[in-house]
Image (cartoon, rainbow, N blue to C red; front, side, top):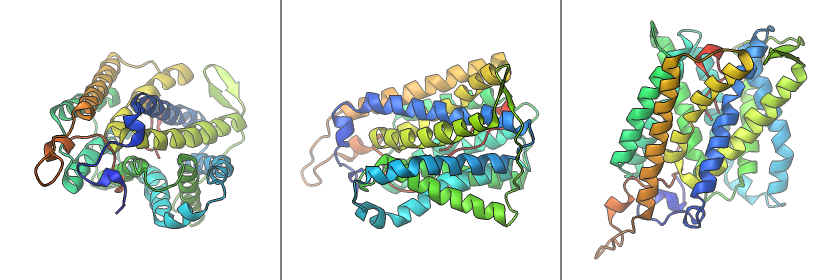
Amino acid sequence: MSNDAHDTPGAPAPPAVARGGLGTGLVLAVVSAVTFSLSGPLAAGLFATGWSPGAVVLVRVALGAVVLLPFGVVALRGDWAPVRRNLRLLALYGALGVAATQFCYFAAVQHMQVGPALLIEYSAPAAVVAWLWLRHGQRPGRATLAGLALAAAGLVLVLDLTGARLDPVGVAWALGAMVGASTYFVLNARSGTGLPPLSLAAGGLVVGAVLLAVLAAVGILPVTASTAAVGLAGAVVPVGAVLAALGVVTAGVAYVTGIAAGRRLGARPASFVALLEVVSAVCFAWVLLDELPRPVQLVGGLLVLAGVVVVQQGEAATRRTPPAVGPSLGTRPEAEAGTATGTIEPAAGPAAATDVEPTGKP
């Protein structure tokens, strides 16, 4: 689907990684995960005053689009050719990576509990690993598989699925949210489009906001709102300030840094770092909503962190391994298998803590 070097087995690592952009990519990925995770506790405060989940999601995405659009236009520097070349990409990013992820998540929690819905949605890293393996021959290494197992065990503990019940309809919607989240990660890693991260984020949020607005207009996405102040961290916060934080921080900053991280790290490692969003959401719920995490959640958080570290160490070791030149193909396939450079096929995001009814990602 692309001419990007990421799509070609045996292609060199992206210039950003080759120049030592790995550290910057990790920082950006952590910033993206933390800012995304703030959406859940902020949304929980709004829910308590009468806001519906659909209204919170719509306002969050729409405000993010309004804030980022001017910056996205400036980032193009008058060259609109990348936009024209990537109209399908922008539509896919907005429809799946933004709108579908959030709509499917909230549809899922109408039929099942938040914990299992989030667990299914956050299986996106495993879906990314499978996609890159089956579609692009990027076989995961032992470190990636070990990190995946640790992170999965940690998520189960963080989300505390005690007594959880599964509903087939809810599972189907949650799987839809997982597909949307996976699309977000893989498209973030597409670096050969010519679209600056600001422009891709702005375009995707505009498309997502329009689609969510249409769903709200036809009654599929229930929308109710309130002007009442919100209680957070023992203080009373004006609703406008909470909405501004949702739009600017949890949408604008989160999407831009997520795209920039994906282009430096690749889809696979970036998706694993994004799992820190669940752990961060529990911490924010503790600070803002006084929801003390249970010991089992703390243990789970440590396992998630360990899984992310194991994956990153494995991916870094793969990058440092020089490819062996073969007699005819030029590159040893085994050296490419398990590389962390991203590809460009479909896949924010992720959501929040189980105790705060998160707003779902990207």
